[in-house]
Amino acid sequence: MNNDCIFCKIISGEIPSKKVYEDETVYAFEDIAPVAPVHILVVPKTHIANALEITEENSSVIAHIYEVIGKIAREKGIESFRVVNNCGEDAGQTVFHLHFHIIGGRKCGIMA
Ligand code: AMP
Ligand code: ZN
Image (cartoon, rainbow, N blue to C red; front, side, top):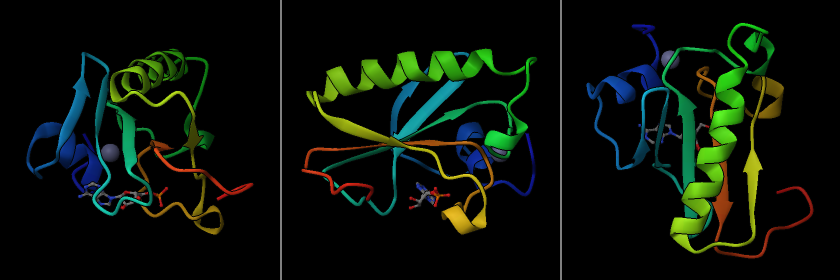
């Protein structure tokens, strides 16, 4: 738990969220500013700032996140979707707790 991190506060329940999925290591919730009919964020419960902090010790959660992404997509009935992970400010990362956007329910452009 990082006390300055908004997603850590969402995971702990201190900040409300619309929960989509939860297990021991992963939490998923609706993005507050959706860019598509389906826009869900999937995060590890452990605070990892971004892709640069993925190591041999913590990387197993990433495989699990992708299992959860598939589960959520099937539950939402979207066969086609995009997974986005922004790493660093120039890439558009605004919250520094690793998260994967599931964006679907509309046709996507080439990269956005
Ligand atoms: P990124 O720009 O990749 O760091 O994505 C951060 C995402 O978090 C954005 O899509 C925001 O809309 C979303 N977001 C920020 N605060 C909240 C919140 N309190 N609840 C849900 N989503 C949030
Ligand atoms: Zn955090």
